[in-house]
Length: 147
Image (cartoon, rainbow, N blue to C red):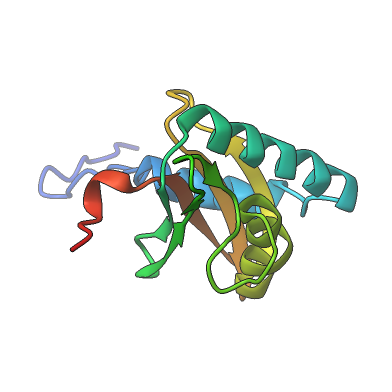
């Protein structure tokens, strides 16, 4: 018995689409990362506080480009020209406390809050309606023009 090979038959190639780094991270966050505990959130308040002290800007932004969601934070200045961290619109609350206790939980479930490798921002992952989104918190002073 002979087997004939069909020369006209096309080869099937398997193609794996990796997607972007953001797509890969979204999948990991959705499938493998648990929400931060209350204790972990307290530690993250300190991380944000230290980041604000280190960068020492007047304006900060929380941005999720994918959702077209952004919030601008303004730090007040005292008579000596020093910043004090009262978040405009949230009377008496410091920016880091307001961010982690009010703003982020109102958007979704907090999965991760980490300083970027370049230390120029904070990467925040939220789960919103069972989908993960990356937010960045970073100094925004150069983009604001005061008249």
